[in-house]
View (tube, rainbow, N blue to C red):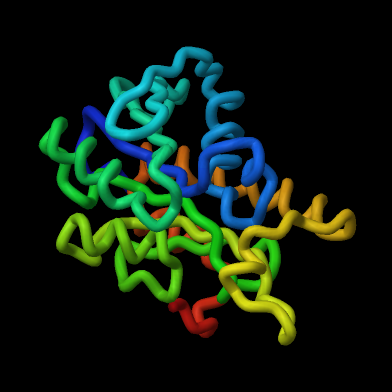
Length: 206
């Protein structure tokens, strides 16, 4: 049986950009997963803290009791996400292993969900800023594929586009899968999530 590394508090950070302008863009999948989790866990109360929106949840599960989850949606804009994560971790004296990042990834095929226990920013500005702010690459993360940018489009422009009609179903399914993966991480840890959700052991993970 896989056991959570440490009972008590767990922290989930969805990466994205604040404001209606960015709400449905590819770069905001981290925020969308937090929204899915709020529905799953019936969380309605939000407060402003740590340069972001903070939600507290007690996920219902018969697998393990007594785990409190704090979900943070940084409002600093993507490239400065690290400040919000560092503020939260410093306040709670949380180790990096108890913080899970959820983000989009243009290096993965559309709708693919992958988990990793650590690693570099891999070209994702938000992830890179968190890694730099925390001074460690050992931060668990769940990445959702948004597909590669078209040849004629710069990546920084592509991530701020919205999903096409033909992409909506795959992305909504991926958001739901990622939310389930987050819940599995809370109760079972990152190794279990990688074993369960990483569909191909041979695919390069950046």
